[in-house]
Length: 406
Image (cartoon, rainbow, N blue to C red; front, side):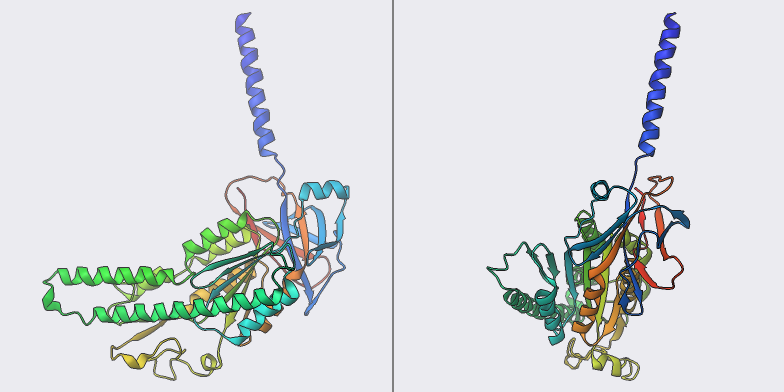
């Protein structure tokens, strides 16, 4: 009898654990997808829940709720559930978080115009703004407009941005001069193999300091996204990027690597990985690639490949050391173009930063929030691809590429 009692207790305990396991696996996960729908340049704002189709890894999902957002307002909500209950479950956040990241090495007046436009026509109380310049990070949050006017906020940011850009390029030039000075060291002062060790140590130090001046580093980007991921509400990042060339000596790359191939591997970004992380964090990323007339009119090939395409970066006439110019921007900017597309943002190349910024902002202010609960959800760490369609229409649709099931 005791054996039967023990067996029954074990059976009940096992069933309880099994039921708990099933319950754990069946936890509902609600996926939020910001979606923008355009016909040409016109945002389509009359769509309902019946118009949308959501696919996850090619499998049609049930659309649970659709909210039409314009700036900070939910102007329409569409769900088969009770609306109050739906809002509690899906909890759509409309407070906006803006991030400006400047990876540029000279100031253009159009950048100031973009900043003035943001504070005058976009920024409202409740918005948060984080600005990352080449040297500093600035936060604008819950600022009392009656105490500090928008005009004053814009002016202060422009002044700080100009100062930081100037200081960073001076430091950049000084580091390049330090690099060149390594080559002037007299070998007789250090016997072999101390010479090579000294040169590599100095190269390593300069490479670290140069690396600190650039944000386009994979680890920095991923750490940055991890912080933003926990932020509630829409997250809009605007990358202001400019062409960047690294000057390296033919037989001795600036970062102290053995050859150019090793240097290229160091500078490369894992585009697929970055795209997945940005998309999973529900960040809308916009790339504004700032060019100049000289960048478009004069190429390295036309000038013999011996000088920078951007002649303002530093004065090549001050040294006679032969150079090979390595333009590292191509892969980096292509990566950010892919990030913009994977997050439903815009990538634009222009000499007019203000116009490109305005276009990106306007695209970010009107959107739908779609919600669905994935069928047979399994937290296996895999990336789930999302596809949104509008029934019977050939609209241009932008949204994040997917999420990581974890």
